[in-house]
Image (cartoon, rainbow, N blue to C red; front, side):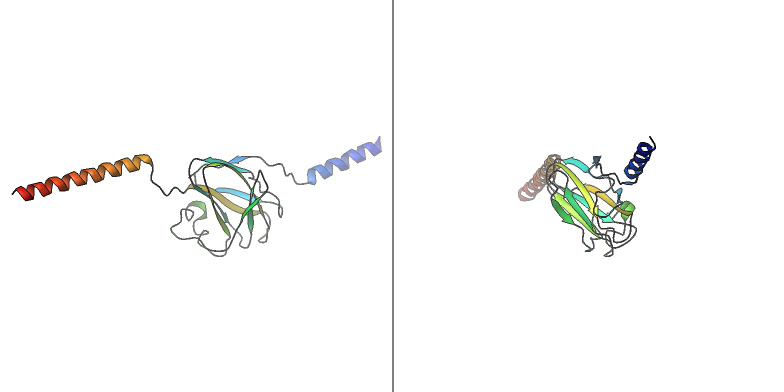
Length: 180
């Protein structure tokens, strides 16, 4: 009986000490700003993985290192385990939508690594791992922003109405000057 208790106690200790890698889906909402995440172990999925979302138009999934410089992150397709992108230390632009909110300034700082990954319409599930070079736990931010370059249908309609109105005004003004 004592041997069974000892074995059970040792098994419980190992189970509690081992990191849990069960991934839960974390939804990310388009245009909602930065959300925090972190890796606790080298090359294992982050606490927030899998990041899931569906977009109807083009969008940009972004990641920025924070807090301690030097970490490199990898973005994977959660379904196929395909490596999609690796963070780089190339600074983002000051006018980029990512250069706001909780990570203001980090996006343009060349000491912090970043990813800006373009996606088209569809459903996605991404997992993120990191090397923890800056130390563990390694924190970072993620966000999803629409990247539609074409105006919406209502915008096109308003532009056409505006152009038609300007054309009518110019035509009526030209007729008045010709008949005078």
